[in-house]
Length: 480
Ligand code: GLN
Image (cartoon, rainbow, N blue to C red):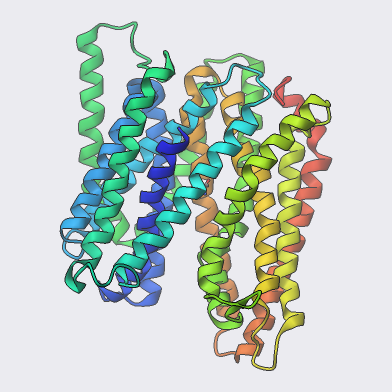
């Protein structure tokens, strides 16, 4: 699962890293339009994980969903590799639906690898998360570097650079699926069809309808993504609808199970705040990095934007496994913090990181350019926050949801991060607006002040979560 997800994230982040640049330089969009378009794509991608998860729970099973999602992603990337300019939104549409089928289901399978109550689950998800970030780092770096012709310039003609870059995303996705098909043998019955009890012909019919329905959705998504005003409407609708659907499902479950589901929803709501701050990375922090940071990290000449994009992944790769082992070590000594406290810690680390971003103002020169070293330290601290919240959040979703709703709940977990991305854009736009027409030094003041405020909010959130932990714990009925 580690490697299958690693290659999928290579493809996903590789493509994500190319979007804005490609839209501005190849599709002649303005920066504002490209940013909005980028936000819309991200929102749709993560929103579809809810749909993909639900269809897996009800009809396809995790394996088939994952495989179908992977196929759609391959087709999407091949379309983009053939003619990225002409078929841009078609390719993106395939990738959105494909990721929706792939991402929640591979994560749910990881949860299923562990028996109920197995204390190694969190550590397993932490290791899996290292795979996510290894893929993100490689893909995020290689694809755009090839597209922009920073890499392999002598081997790839200028007119083919983007085709090769998108083609690479397709190739690694094939590797991801091959890895998965080889692993399936070891999965026993995990992720097989939930409809084995019904007649085979009927089951096949439902499956084919799901495949056909998801294909029919692609043109609709294409149109919705290409007009960003639809994204707002979509975001207003999908979240409340998913909540209503969960409430509707709750009638099939016992009071104890419903309490656990309520706890899962609380964790999702908290994660929205976390991602809204964290995802400043792609927005306001990248503008800050561009204008207000030195090009030197401990004496090495490096691009501050490159650091802003990759430091987090590097830190996850380095620290995910040791932290996972630390959870196991603490568990053996019966002092492992429970998930709620880990979430609280996540917010406290986030606060610490943003406070460090705030402090960069103390190291600035007269031109408003400040230390990349201090900035990178901020990312190190935030990464610990992410590791306390993101893999742990996936893990707890599998523990808190009834067997038959696991992928849908996992999809909702990612849907929450779609909202996080969405609010991140709004927050970032606020900071950017406040610094319009400012000098570089004034902009530094405005941005760091904004980060100082985010630090304060996350500190308060962390304190509230830890203080409220006895209440949430009651809902969780023994799940840790
Ligand atoms: N970076 C993680 C991943 O891609 C988290 C995604 C999310 O929940 N927003 O898997």
